[in-house]
Image (cartoon, rainbow, N blue to C red; front, side):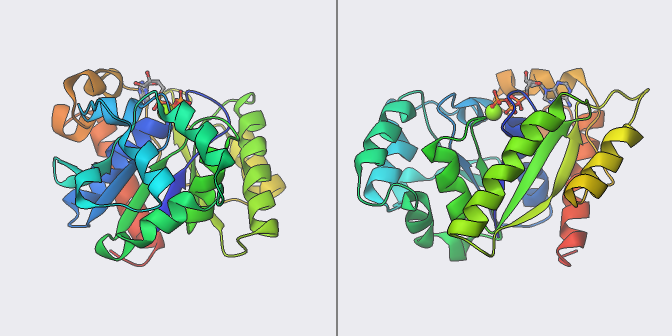
Amino acid sequence: MIISVGNRKGGTGKTTTVVNLGRALSLKGKNVLLVDLDPQANLSYSYGISTEGCVLGEVLLDKHIDSGSIFYKDGLDLIPSNTDLQEYEAELIRSNAPKTALKEALEDVKDQYDFILIDCPPTASHLTVNALMASDAVLIPMLMENLSLVGFEQMIDLVFDIKTKYHSELFILGVVGVLVDERRHLTTQILEALRSNYGVDVFNNYVRQNVKAAEAPASGQSVIDYAPTSNSAKDYIAIANELLKILNQS
Ligand SMILES: Nc1ncnc2c1ncn2[C@@H]1O[C@H](COP(=O)(O)OP(=O)(O)OP(=O)(O)O)[C@@H](O)[C@H]1O
Ligand SMILES: [Mg+2]
């Protein structure tokens, strides 16, 4: 299954979710590929991978993935990126299949994986459109604050636009609450708005605010490896279990 992890708002734990949900799924014995589709390249950094060339940029222009494009780290595979991805995006827009390059490229490898997680940038760029076109489903990490509903709304508008115009099978897997203040938990007001106004599912498990999650990227490891007993490690393992249950894979 190919899942885009996206939200039009910045800093909502997208990359942290890809890093740690990916790792948690790999620990459940799943074959996992992570795709760094954000020119900020935070996903690659979080796994300590830095490349001179922009591996994902080349993949998008070639529309193919060869073994040299896939890096192995801590039980999972990753296609890295770097800040040059921005220039590749400009070239991609001028190419003949600007929306489906990633979809075509992933055709080469998708049968080898149980899960492919795509880390999206917080923009409605061609990169995000590529992610959605290539995906079966979308997972939206979200801060449980009123202001976050704006970015969330923009994200679902984009998803429905893609669904209506090009990809009718695309669906929203759900919202995951992140950076949740333990004293406040998920606010009922926001949960209510998500469920009744937008009809999306919200994961029962959520990610608590925890300093270990913020520290882990500098170590080049997931928080599950960096601080296995931390709340963040536990939360992401619980979310992976919930996801497998939703998909009847547990
Ligand atoms: N559970 C958590 N507890 C504390 N800090 C966290 C947690 N999850 C993420 N962070 C920190 O919050 C910041 C934003 O997280 P992250 O980079 O995952 O968001 P993002 O949505 O990918 O951002 P962008 O939109 O810039 O790509 C980062 O500094 C990250 O380390
Ligand atoms: Mg990010």
